[in-house]
Length: 231
Length: 245
Image 1 (cartoon, helix red, strand yellow):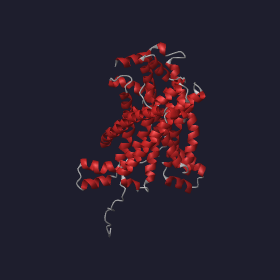
Image 2 (cartoon, helix red, strand yellow):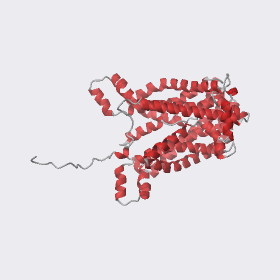
Image 3 (cartoon, one colour):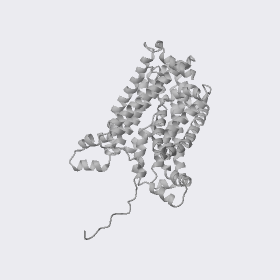
Image 4 (cartoon, chains in turn yellow, red):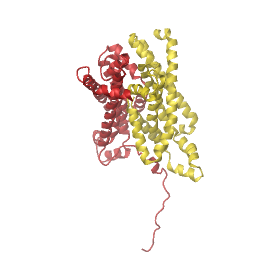
């Protein structure tokens, strides 16, 4: 506690840097993954290929990926862009599978009904398919958010400023309180992001709150989601 | 591209391969961490997951535990334990056990939960005891999901084992950190390529195992093709009864 009091300014600055590093990958990853998931679901062949390739991308350990990035992107070795792009790749890899499952989970009869009422394919996607897959997309986004916030700390190993700085500095100077502060700060950011996403879900998807009865399928999906995925 | 070739040249150079500091030995350490930590985690998490899955008690705790741990920064835990236990292999090993427990736990209870309740009722109805239901029905049917959990545990640990070198725990990360410190980019890159290949190979092996353990004739997984099954009963359309035939 004492360490935190005397270094509050540093922790606050690092927290802001950490948020700035992890928000773009979450948002951009989500936006990219929706069209990919749609294409994956559209054709039988593309679904298998896309999901396998993205699964393999997610298999690449984070530290090597941060190190590969400058070669692929031509950026300087210590640029924060390396970490942002790598985190976006992970976010997409994690999100596309959930998004594909979410879009697929929409009742086929509902889609037929929408078409029968005169919706074009474009309208049907925006007004029926996307909103109805919202709860599944949200659960996927929550997982992406937690894993991105946690992975961003590893960026500090390759010299990109985040809360991971507290781990490395705390190790070098042998201050356990500094490391603990870092862990707690990361967890607080993750929890706050999660709460924001849940609240956002309640505002954007007001109907999903009442659907408590159908929760066994949702909870099973959540369990399956949790058992998958890597750091 | 030249940099990648340099990295591959580093891997192929015999001087970097053998001996206590060569990458053969470091690769062995990486694998030892991975399978050691996953084995310990499995001993803890599988019985716990089966208990939760069979009784349904403590489900919410298990779910939030396996979800919440995802946000735990592994580097922070590693360094904190490193400060407490000193440098060496103990701090990394404990960190990796902590890391591997949530996915295995989730795999174990999700495997049990995915079993159709009717199947379990049927097993009970034909006179199976609770122990028989667990051993002969729930465990085999839930095995693919359990292996899935172990698979993501292994991948998570094999990726994070790279960080063990940060607290002098060895493994392939040693080359990455050494290369960064001495600005020897081909060494860093060579080790990064090795770690990535290792992760991809393990992923392939486990994907294969997961396919093989599915009991014949049954797949204890959520129905994937949700769209093809109508949620509403169809209108009865049959051939009209033909009288007098």
